[in-house]
Amino acid sequence: MSINIENLKKRIIYRSQYRGTKEMDKLLSSFVNKFIDKLDTTQLLSLEKFLEIDDENLYKFYNGSETIYKFDDNEISNLFKNYKYKQ
Image (cartoon, rainbow, N blue to C red):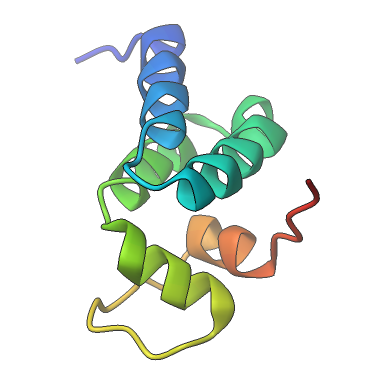
């Protein structure tokens, strides 16, 4: 099965911008915009899966708080954990 990379990127960008909370909309859209063109197909698929996690757990993970979700130790979660958001 062939993956349309441009459609995948559009889905990821959309999902990062429309989360439900303004804080996560800004944080995730900024994160995605910084890295989306640097990621390969496998990483993009991991990012798409990462964006399925709810805002509360993502926010806690980003801030180093304990979460109920078990995050995978992969490149996407490490990039996000170390991402420095600038407004």
